[in-house]
Amino acid sequence: MALLVVLAGLAGPASNGAAPSAPASTSAAAAAAAAIPLPHDDPFYRYTGKKPLRKIERGTVLKTRSVTIGLPQSGQGLLPATQLLYRTQDQQKKPSVTVTTVVNPTGPANAGLVAYLSFYDALGDKCSPSYTLRGGDPGQENMELATTEAGLVTALAAQGYAVTVPDFEGTDLHWVAGQESGWSTLDSIRATESFLGMSNSQEVGLFGYSGGSIAGEWASELAPRYAPELNIVGTAIGGVPVHLAHNLSYINGTDSWSGVIPAVLVSLGRAFGLRMSKYQSAYGDKVTDEVADECIGGFNGNYPGLRVQQLVKKKYKRFLRVPAFARVVNRLIMGSAKGHPTMPMYMGVGDHDGTGDDVMVAKDVEALAHQYCGQGVPVQFEVYDGADHTQGGVQFFPAAMAFLAERFAGTPFAGNCADIGPGNSLAPLPVRKKR
Image (tube, rainbow, N blue to C red; front, side, top):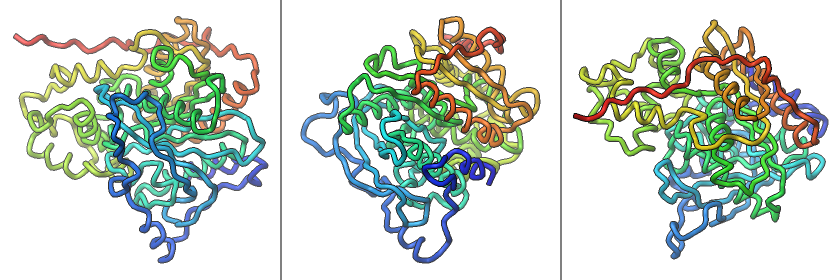
């Protein structure tokens, strides 16, 4: 419950400083939650217009509906909101659609627009924020994470922000697909500004931890070329997976985080169109089938000691030397896009064991911050000493909110670039050429 506890301090006076409590497990609440269709059963998530999607501008609103957001499985609404189906593009740049949930401020108006980027980390849509924010049931194993995020969204609204919460993994659940997450985020801002009648000069902040940091970081580095009209005044990201090869080496065979390995294989296979059956062992097929519709609460920690080598055929055991996987990993190294962010950035990561927070590598995040500093980006980089990934989130949330509040207030920002070391090498993996 550590993540829930911090919300009381984030909500502020506008909500009497009270964080949402976990929903009661009553038959009435469960019945109400069950009445909310999962996204794959909900026609709102499908574009059925006559005009081909490829001929529609990215960020265009395709459908709207009024909803009420509340706590997962409660069947009770707390705040009125609007959901937008909008046009974006997937990891392979094919036209696609997804949904964002727009919440109007409940505190002092006109504080700014915040894109809150969820750490839903999902292969199944029962954890999509557009579903859980409406009171949909993500399953007990994902309940605390979804409840925490409902609290974060309502806390932001209570501070006077308009909040947009995109399902940035898309309707096909492309978790960890960096560019797609970034494009979907930027297009959600375009759609939200259009729907709310905001101009392109509207100040926008990006806020994402863990899986949400993927969307926030990639949106930041892609924005100058993909959406230069947006006025993003600050990005706060924490628990950042900068170089997936390094993350894999860190968690491979561990008891706590190795369960994400098969899930990443599933999601990247989907996003990049890889035929994973070519590479996977029989055991790999079994495990990836087990996680194919799960969220992080359903697979993380469930495969203690799992190694990627168990999931692939013997000839692919040197996993990161397989050209198909090396290319995907290299494509997803943060900071590798042409250009760089132009907005101030806050970047945080825990250091639990001298390497990182048990899943994210602290020196990788430092290296990315150092790289951006060298490109003239003002960065505040913080390491949360002794903190694992969850504890890092508890420290990140209030710091990120304070950082964004200062950016919207126009407070001068210098960052701490002079104190940021070079960190690890973020060099791409070598890719063996076909003979």
